[in-house]
Image (cartoon, rainbow, N blue to C red):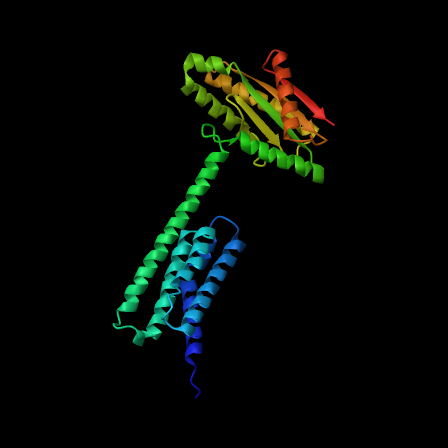
Length: 308
């Protein structure tokens, strides 16, 4: 019977090990995290391929050159694009791959324990880097969230509203999908703050934001763009729908304020666009004009306009 060459034996054993790893370490669970699953699958397979390539190079050139630093690439890819669990798994796999190659070259070392000590140190470095990278990504994600949302009300802030409204304008210009927008100002809010304090004022703002958000679609955008001002972007909304939404929101907000004993009302500027505005500045000017038109009507009212 023809004996297999050492290189072929290495390849077969590495393939067997990878298969065992995938069965026992829950690759499917690793890949089911948040984000694009296809990207995660691609990154994980690429990382396994890199481990195999690095191992093959190490096998051919021997133990004299320290190539273990190149394992940081698959460790980084998995830690960043998939998550901490995948980073830990790839770190372990990388260390075991290098240990296996060291054991094939055991005559090179003065003591049989040296490969185990070396790989323990390498694994420690891989794991430290994995935890640093995953923690960094989590921190960046949290910072991005804080930069996008109003900390008091939990709705998006002015910057996000401007960005999304700009995207909606571009989408309308390209696909002719109508949208509407509202500018809601809380009448007499300053009096509430001055009389009852900022704590009650904060509770009022939080309540207003949630009443608006809870009574719109998940695709609509609610943003706090000023101290007592909110803007709403109603995607895929025609003139008829916008005419119904504005009074309904006004009624819900008014009833909620009365229920809580808060003496405030709402002036709403509403515009339904059958023709896209030139830019976000034109959109906001129109909404601002309509909102102040509602205030000039005596406050607690709606000023609506269909932009054709």
